[in-house]
Length: 203
Picture 1 (cartoon, rainbow, N blue to C red):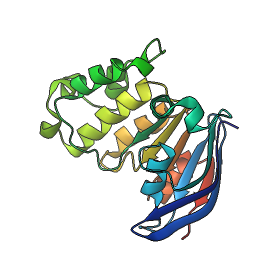
Picture 2: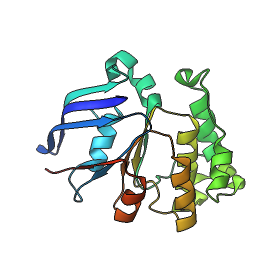
Picture 3: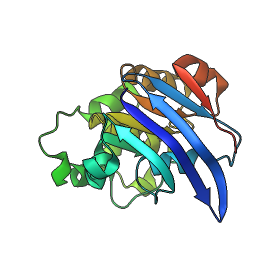
């Protein structure tokens, strides 16, 4: 197996949202996470990416824990794309250059994010505009293009196409073929198209 978690606990605000959760992702598989709003899907992804403090449980990527990988390297291999396409400082090109300058990104085989963006109907000029001047859908595609271009082993996708039109959504889903992902979507139609397996989350 590529990615495995066991006994995962997600706490927030003094209460337990998820307890003793187990999940497994095979290479090239799309595992869709489903559950009611507030069950902890987004918080779970943030913990799997080692962005938020870990509560309890064990994680393994290719048999190695986050501590064995090192936090920065783990985040390059288990890449989170946040929900809502947040507004960042500068432009998408500034963000791409900052990512490329990280030591943990050195000597990696990567794709060209502009090529990915073109496939999703995003003008290349969008990468030179301030994040604040882009629409939610434009920001979403820029962030996804940069994330996918780095070829992480696992993508953690939180409603990645929520602001995309049907054509861009279909093109993005095609770009995800062969990649490994934990995918949160509220669309049953999308889940039916992309899911190799579904994990229902309950409190």
